[in-house]
Image 1: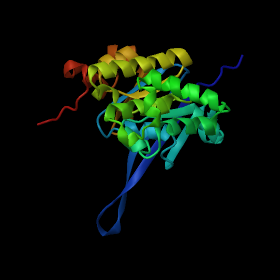
Image 2 (image 1 turned 135 degrees about the horizontal axis):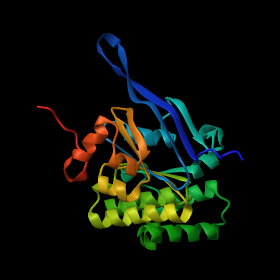
Image 3 (image 1 turned 60 degrees about the vertical axis):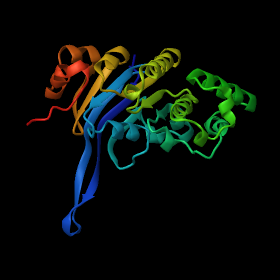
Image 4 (image 1 turned 120 degrees about the vertical axis):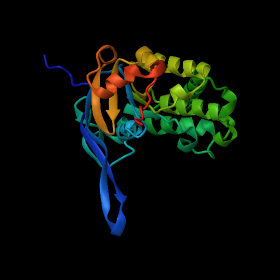
Length: 266
């Protein structure tokens, strides 16, 4: 019996950008270099590393926001770009940390959530209304916000709305940028519980940027460590936490309070 391809495969993923130098010369700088990993349905991957290591860039590439990319992104063995747009939108959604920059402030909340349903599902108007009401309740927003413009909401409400927008299509893959560990403890616990519930209820694969080892150990199945755009380690969380193979992996375990920090030499 032929084994089914993994839900998501990343093969030799590389991207770079050019910076201007003197005399109109431009230098190519690699942001990610030869990244390789695969995930099965329902697995949670924690991506960790220094600021500027390429964590957010990796998520943006998988989400389709960056086009200047070499390598392959395969969904069940087929290039993600070969799928129809309606399928890609349902496959992958992103929970943005900067909600203010990902949501149009001048469109009412109900329309923001209804549009992806209207464009990418065959749900009736009544079914779309019911799902919008359900998702607002699920993320902790009152139904009254449906008539509000995002510009009228506070930061926490916008964050919850961003999560609702990411979950409204029940994606197969949910991308979570570096936001969770910066929240206060109560809100952090609520968001984490929602993410874990999505994994359990819909077998959602989650890729989340995290540096806090307690959260990684609590949430994730696998761990990817990036170091200046290079793939330092990819393995099961337990294996890395017990016996890291890279220098940066070993340094993570030596940091205070189980939190990853850059060690500056003096």
